[in-house]
Amino acid sequence: MSVLGRLRLLQRARDVPDPFETLELQSRLGRLAAELHRLDSSTERRFARGHHLHAAMEAYERTLDDACRLAGLPVEPGRGPAHRLLAETALQQRGWAW
Image (tube, rainbow, N blue to C red; front, side, top):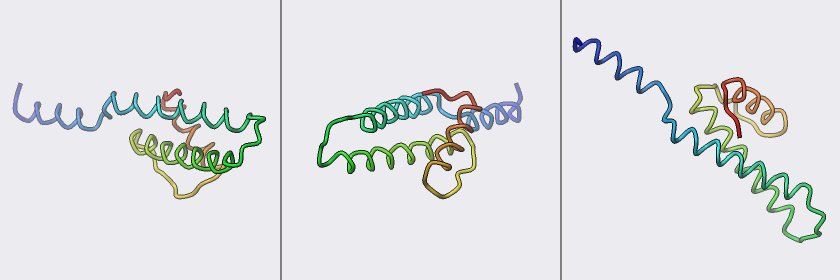
């Protein structure tokens, strides 16, 4: 194989996201989604529940942004339900699951 051919293979290899990083982000999204569901459906009246819910949502949204960057999707600045829905849909269209 020529040097140019090897360089092309190396360039393609760099364009492909690290599968272990992808798996780690998918796993983290799954854990955060489960935590959000648990906090949202909790019937307990804990003082810190709102704070925990807010922190978990912020972590989930930041992880979604990281996943979008890794998948090569443009990340628009913003937060909230619409931003989450667009990011989740775009990732799922790329084959991501959590």
